[in-house]
Length: 193
Image (cartoon, rainbow, N blue to C red; front, side, top):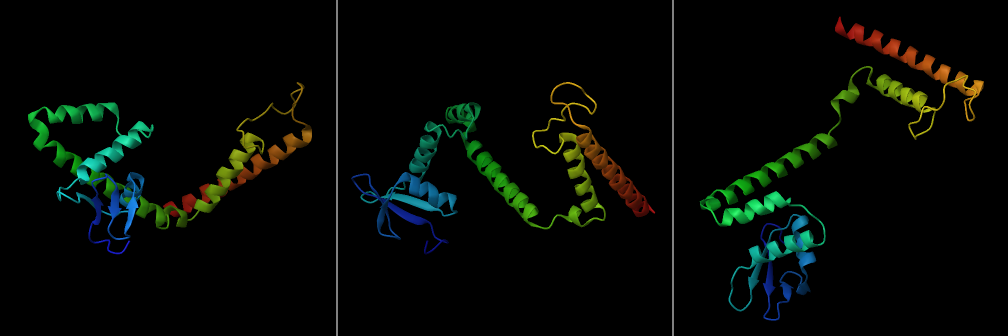
């Protein structure tokens, strides 16, 4: 897009076709939705009358997404919106919704910023050992499988029971976990002093 500081001007012709004035081509509602998702403001005007049709088309985009099963607005919110048009609360609802969406946008931006920054916990002494210990514990509990099943206990004579070699490997893993846990506790106790 050429100028992201100004709204993208879309003109609606008498044939109801939508014309992108920046790229000199026709666009669809899906194109307009994509522009908006990409962070671009749009303004849709009727070519003949000059009327601003932006609100009408944005509502149409939302309605089309909802009709495809992409339910963003819960029924109770839609009901409250309809109800707000018939009450005196209409002056409060738009401001409330605008403030709520602004808060949501700010929260999402903050969350993304926090996720992209280096995790301060990862730099703490002992965190790598704790992560390795957790991995070894999960591996020991699942018998090395990702299914999460611990399988039958060692010495079980039922079909499919573990052999002595498998039980020995698990004992080694358990010993390793105990050793790592002791090292971690020792490091933590040194940090407290």
